[in-house]
Length: 252
Length: 355
Image (tube, each protein chain N blue to C red):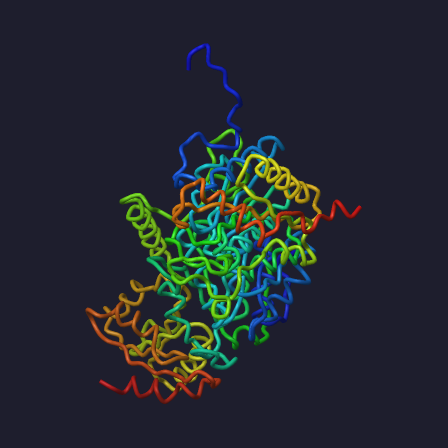
């Protein structure tokens, strides 16, 4: 680096200095970065135990500079429960995609929320199975074409996209549940604030914290990154409304 | 806390629970299923009193996956279940083995396949000793035959789990779980608080971050991992446990494990009193199987009869152990029925008298 160059910002200590493997326009990288920045800013890096799940995001353990354990498909909330019960003094963070969390892992996510485990789960909703090659997810929208809904998702046969942030908010142990989007700078800033809230309720021991991130998958959507961002705005946000669905700190 | 030398009159299931707590159990995760419900019930009442965590999970699947998390954090953790429930736990057991994590899984075997019945059986021998879940791995398996062994072997199970960083299964059944016997407790002083310090997840400070995983995508890395696992299993095989009863001058060795081994011992005692030269070989470690010890007996010219509470599973390991020298007869007592020592007299005498 020449002396004239000035870094606009430093890499957060919770983020490992390696390139990620994600496709162009994928927003896992943005989500990882927000999580890493928050861990650093909140002084949690050395106290965080991370649970990674199955799917594109499994390699999160390579990108966050925190100790981590890998969970089987759908079971990250159960693994996170085990970690937290063994180390109640640590900050426990988990990260799941939509197939992992809302399909095979539906039971585990319901019950971790209902028990009010003091952990934070980041839920990336891009309405498709990414790593396995673009199959239908529980969050795939009506009419959306995927490799296993080639004619578009038919609600009469395949059900409708599941809205997780609302469901999680309805459960007794949830302290915070919100849905945000990563499609523009304004929404990314809001997303970071919401994630911070979810982390804070864990730190305060108030209960379970849940953040749903609407994100893109340009590769499996067969779109350019710009088109994908536009789809988040025009199709996803109207069906998956952004907002805070539960915040026990706001009820004080 | 467990007192040293206290004599209690308790069920096998309670002995397992007390033994686990004596061994320093910190986290228990379970889901009710007959005939092992005494274990989660005991844990829910007693584990919190010693600072441990009890979770009644939403399913057997979740309970076994909670083990992954607690074990990764270096905690002494356990789950218990019975046959159909243990099938549901197998995915997590495969991950525990693949991630080299220590945990104890209790299976109070009931009759199967499917829903079967709630009576005693040894139908899960294959599942317990041959892996059970997906991939190339083994679970270390210990089979108690008495309530005292329930207590002692669960303590040993935790030590072995941490020594080898591998899941360890206690394989019992409704007989040993539900019967009451005197059990002498003991204090366990040496379960080291530093256990797992070099590998557990505890927060990355002043070192590189640790990743506990079973995914090995780079070419050759899974091969290396699986070779390391195999080396571990080979090491385990050097220390098998077995009970030899009246084997020295015996012409016929009956091979039986767990509750059935215990019942066969009574038959052997009775037949000995009648002058029959029979003995009992009771494997306590079912995986690794005590092949070498059995082979020594085969070299001495003994005949063999394997008795199991199933259609014939362990007999395959017995035959493998002695295959270059001799064979073993087999007598299977049908699951769903409770055997008495008398039930085994005829098959033993038949094998003794046979060629």
